Image 1: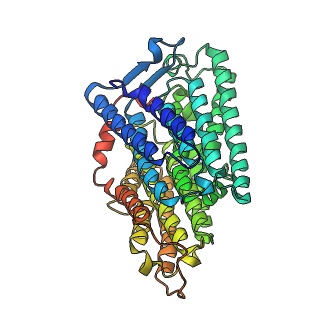
Image 2: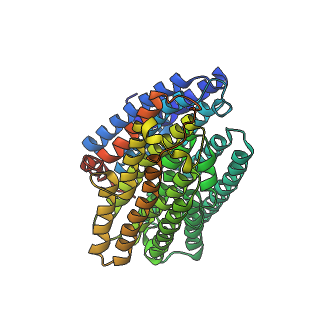
Length: 477
């Protein structure tokens, strides 16, 4: 295993297939072991990048355009580290969450494996068509996970999600076809010198289609209609995976294209994603404040927090920390949101209620879980010393340096609105509640994994320079 890149794709495919063959609900420890090895491979890749620079790989020894090209730079490595790290903790969480014979666990492990294989391949793919293939694999596996519970609401949410992901992938694929028709290649490396500001109208149309399709898959306002029911209705481990990781995959691809082949076109539309991101922050926060269900509150918070990722696009062309701010926001949000959904899952598991009102009395019964929820809230609000604070500080710094005062104001307003819905839950948790027999005891594994994710999101703010150093390896495009 001297070449980590292909093994990061092949290994999850292998253990996902093995868990499927073992039968419904089986193979949890095989999956956990596989993800642990993937973590080791990702750290090895990060070490290679820091020592040697970007790592290309031609699958089977065939160079493009005949072969499938893989490539890793600092941006890809950061996303791979986030994916494996969060997946490992959530796999442990899922092992304790699903009871024997649980309908939602029947195909969780193979679907999770195919999801991780698709995400790893997406971060490493170096041509537009293989990126489409990985998008489809990620989307279909995610839809299967949403539908895994088998309830009517979950199936409805899964169908809505399926419609959104197929529509987004279809728009992206049509854009790829137009790019191939214009240039005769889909290799990102070969496209870099070919695309300039004076491109055919077909390429402008392709860029617009690809951007719109990826925004739909990222659930950026106003394309967010599928996210709250899908994330809010799925089992807690699935909600955490989707919110922490899956929506970051399509954002990563937007960023890769924006900084890569479509960079000459980006200036003309740079403020569009920022305006939609600002609307997402305000609308998603407002809906989270008004949500009655606990998991729906966390899901609407995801809509809001994703908006910060798109505030960087008008700032990213100029020298400054805008790219670092966006990537730091993606990582800190991934950790915090996984922790928040995991903590909400513990509360629902113990109380049997998925309402904000049902959180009353949890402070005395589940102090560690509530502390994990609060730590994740610290990151979402952007309070020091969390990773969210570092991300928002860098974003405000980049905005003020370029005179974009409105973006800085949106970041501050979003942090205040996040405080409202986070403290709404915390306040309710300290209220007295009638004595109700617990639906289930609180497994320590669930509580400690939620706490570990939340603590990591805060500690990221203290060790963020290592992440930013890795990010600087190679070109982001």
